Structure formats: C-alpha cells, structure tokens
Length: 340
Image (cartoon, rainbow, N blue to C red; front, side, top):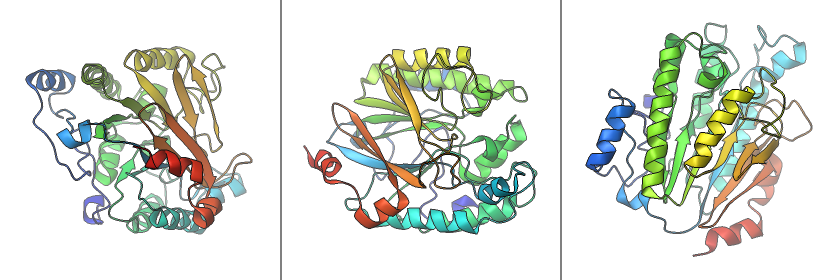
C-alpha cells in the first residue's frame, strides 16, 4: 500500500508544498511565480491560501521524532548496522503517542515527525515491513490532524543518492517543502544534504536554491513567524561546539545555514536525531532538539513536544507519553492557545 492509498492522514507533500490544510491554494503573485521558477522549475513553488497566510490567533502543533522502528532491538544487541529484526516496542510507543494526540482538545493544527521514521537503512532487511507497520499506526491519527513528515538519515541513508531520495518521496512525500498555517511559514529541510551530499550534489544544490527563494518570500510577506523542521540539529548546545560527525552539522555548514535563516527572520529550528532533549540559542535563533518517541539514548522519557505559537513568541514543552496521555496539555499552555 502506498502512502497515498493509506488514508486521508497521508496528504503527501508534492511540488514542494503540502496541501493537507483545508483552505486550498491561492494564485501566486507574478513576483512569487518568478521566484518559484528560479528556485526549481520542475517543482513549482509554495503558495498559501489567503486564509492560511493571515494571522488569526494562537494555535499549537505536536512534534515527535525518531519512532525509528527497529532501533530498540538493534541498540540492545549492540548491532545498530545490521540488527533491528523486532519493533513491537516502537509500535506500542507510537500507538500510545497517536492515541494521546487524538484525545487532545482542541486539536493540534498538525503532527510533525522529525525524521528517522524507521531504522532499516535503504537496501537493508526489514525496511519494507517496518514501513508498512508505521503506516498502519499512522493511519489511526485523527483525519483532522494532518501529518508532516521529515526525512532522516535512516530514511534516505547517511550518504543519500538520487535513488534513495526518490524512494522516500514515493513512500512519504517530498523530502523538502514548505507550507503556511495561520500566518506562519513552515520550512521542511532535508538535513542529510548538509551532512553528506557527496552522492547527490545536484540535489543539494537544488534545495539550496529553493531555500534561498523561500526565505526571500518569507521576508517579502512579513510572515508572523518562520519555523524550520529538519532531522539533524544545527548544533546540540552551542553554535561553537565541536563537530560530532553524526549528531550535529559541521561548524562551517551550521554557521552558514544559521546566518541565512536568521537574516530571513526564522525564529526556531526544530529537530530530532539525538534521541535526547537538547538545544541552545544563536543570536535570536533557537535550536530545539527533541528526544525520541522510540529508543532513548539518554535519560529522557519517550515523548512528544507541544509547540504553542502566539503573535509574539513560540513556546514549547516536552511531555512524556504517559504525561500527555494521562493529563493532556497543562493549563498555562492552554491559556496561551485560548488568547485572542
């Protein structure tokens, strides 16, 4: 079963945009059409409906990362490259996450998964089975809550190729895209192009061009906020920290990208990948690293992040799955959502 056939929850990103929101797509201005063609002629541009381009009040969304079906078994056996032949624990945890999200009232605007959807790398055993099981669980997300799916290194490979990127796009939707919700511009990036684009330099260049044009549109539209989702963090704690070669981007890459985002007014970058909560601030850009739904590599619980967007700020809090299931969102965050 393809993602498109899996039910209404899978509104796959196509043409570098996501049409999962009910307002539809407005006709772009001539200037925006020119920018989109310059960015990527074959993929079109990202244009919001008039409804979604306008700020109408606070809202929230739910962010998860790294369900990574198969890692818990692989990690326990010490064979992360070839292990991972069981993923019942991850199925149960992701089911718990979905059930908790479905019970929330009011409903979140969307549910974003920041990469490493499954553990098996391209070409490895159990990849098809893990994918189908994750689709089955995600089909139970309330149809009124769109899914936003971000590519991770396990989804497209540590050194992605044109073929592995295409496989992801066919299964889950575009590997990078943007969309508007409630006056906010959301940018979804393929962070593997910043980590290791050696096998697909032209794809990396295409994303760079596209991002430049999207950021130009963000500046022109004076959007309320701009927010980025990607799998690998720019940094874990500080823009000046040492290169990790796995859990963060290299110093030159992270600095160049961060400066570009700041210049366009991006407020927050959300990521996963670290399987622990972390983050820091560079100038006025917050880097927020969320721990996993699945395997934990530190002391954090399996969990989800609630992100509230107000006119002035972006407030977020990490909840364990048990906390969110049993108690829901705390009162101070609910008060922010209710403010007009």
